[in-house]
Image 1 (cartoon, one colour):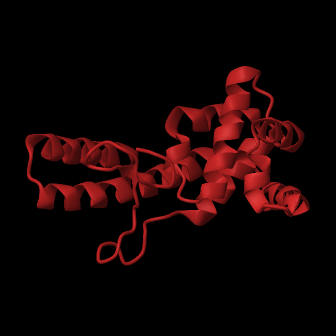
Image 2 (tube, rainbow, N blue to C red):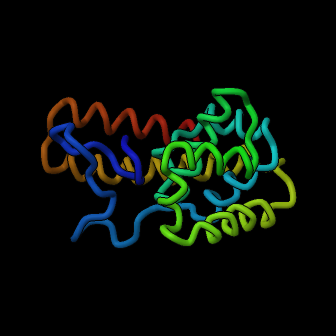
Image 3 (cartoon, rainbow, N blue to C red):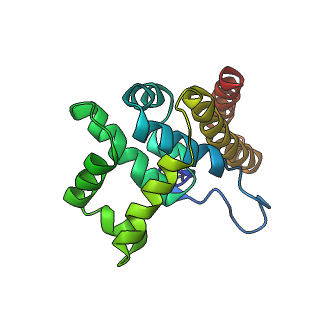
Length: 171
């Protein structure tokens, strides 16, 4: 899988959109859960570490959320300190901060505040992480199902079974 709720194109070169003309009417996504897990990660280091065991940045549908989550996981891997200040500094150092809101960087800070303030506790972080993972696997499964329908190679069928097993494990 690659960023954006996308899976690799059949040739393995680059992303294939999770939503293409004539396929998915509405992409499987968990916007509220994505926001909740990011808020939990920002208020509880343990939640950040636990999320890292289940989620990868590519599991997030939103580009903004994918960038934020990837930066939090780099911070966890480095020294475990994740909060609004360290996240902003990490993203500034990589140039990702400007990608959040373009020229309106104050809007980026406000968005982080919104994520933190919308969550009263990080206790439900494992549940939010499972919802995000499930939506990601659903997107991948539908794309792989279509790919297998078009090209019934043993590799495509095997990948379809792997995704089905992964979905069963998350649900």
